Image 1: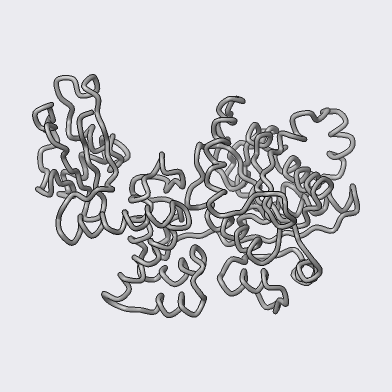
Image 2: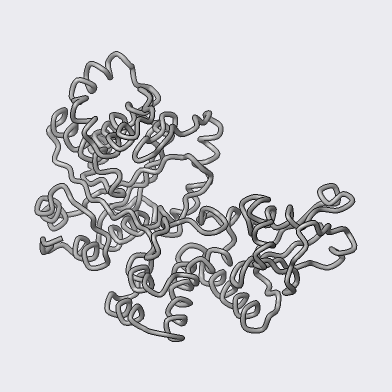
Length: 416
């Protein structure tokens, strides 16, 4: 980004590494200098929780509010029924109304940690695009909105082109998604004065469509700002761990596991992640990221504490840090480890150690659990686990047992 912004928000975005591209740096900067800019990020309700991959855009909304803007969190109650095809190799499974509603309820709880909702000019709004999408008349929509979209141009967008280049099917249902997202932007501008859409760089085509539609139909001036799609320095997709997605809801991933994910950050990513996921001053992030040897571990613990405090609160971050010390420094169990509680019915006459490793989230499948054991990566109560055929019965669970995958991932198993 060679443009030198005057507004506080764009300065923060630039300095902390949030910007991939903008449709009009000068125009957006001018709008930010003139007054309160409402901006939105959309979240489709495809799961009961958001994951770490969504945190960059949540932090963008948080910084917007801290800099005097108005964040809008848009729930995709309508668009989830279609599914975003952007850079996907296959069609999303279709969810029914109840599943979408349940997922929205699960997703909502995260935002209150990062944003202030209320009735003042800069308080955040939470909206649902089902409010305007559910009642659209199809023929009117085709006539009034569809005529503004060029199929040739839509086919040229990288998110669609990459799918077609691989000769993978793209249904007409999915093709409609980008029209609906464009319509969302126009409606948010018309109803709430929203003039900025933010999202990952995979949303560029959808955002540009919304800007064009808003200009053509209601002659509105709106902008788009995208963030980089993050991967770790070793090439892994941000938001994935050995155990699967790093969820933001505590009922899907414990605060301890969340804390541990950040504590396990590779050395090369510490400075970058501190800028993106915490509010520490940029100079301090750079200083901490440049540390070497044992000192970088203290920076990783600070990163884990700061990010966990934002999401789960200071008490949860402190408990997670204390559990980590107990487990790693003293070889103990710790009070905050993820815990699997089995019922008597689930246990029956006994359960295999392979099943327990999978059920506790330390492996994604039985095959993965057996490989973990074969490669001497599994431990039972800190002793090497070598027998993949081991059965655990009620006697073995008279007190909780500790399972470990490698040196950093642990879980307790107990009988309820």
